[in-house]
Amino acid sequence: MQQAVGFCWQFPNATQIKNNIPKRVLYDQLDANQALKQLFVEQVEDIVWTNIFSPRTLNINTTDDVPELNVITIRLRQAELAINVLEALDKAMPRQVIWQLQKPVGETDNIAQCYIACYKHKAENGKWQCSDYFKSPWVLQNLSEIRPLPIATDTKLLYQAMLKALLPLEANIKPQENMAEITARLANLAELEKKITAIRAKLAKEKQFNRKVTLNQELNHLLAKREEYN
Image 1: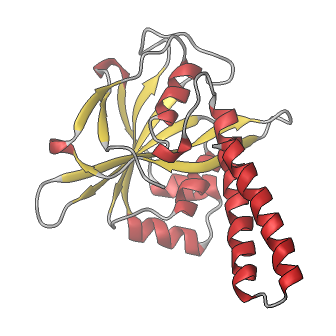
Image 2: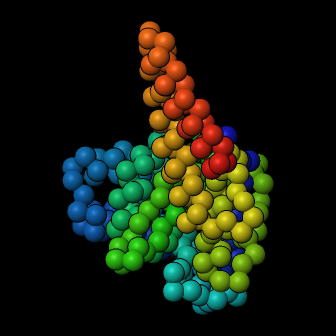
């Protein structure tokens, strides 16, 4: 999927906290196995809780769904962060987080940055559920477009607006569509794409005419369904 243009948000000073999160504390909370610990050692320099968006720090109302919104910065030792590291972190944290990834660029003092997050919410059974992750493109901090925080009256609307800024262009966000609806639609699209790819592979190998007709009918049905989701 094609990504939107990279950017950096300018967070209000009043939201800054800058609390270091020791890896050893995370290991205990995550019940991390040796493989996960090794990923932390190889890929993560440090983790800093940098911003909180709540009525205490911002002129905004709170909601039961999103009592506060957090920004946590992960400085990397490598070019990318394994997605299972983020998944483990999100599972261990009972709060919504926008992850800010930073990494050095070559031997220079330049820092590249991006944002990544999943849509995280509580299900009816009270357990946290996480969607797939959405990520902005990497950009150099000193050359990026600087954006203010999205305008929102409460923490839930702010969370949704920040997540929408990370969505790929192909997401085709519809007016008034919320993140629950967007993530469900994108998940259905991803499942359809898998089925379409599988049927096309079968068609390429199929020799029997009658079977090809049936497969083409199935393919056309799935393609029409895909258009409904777009």
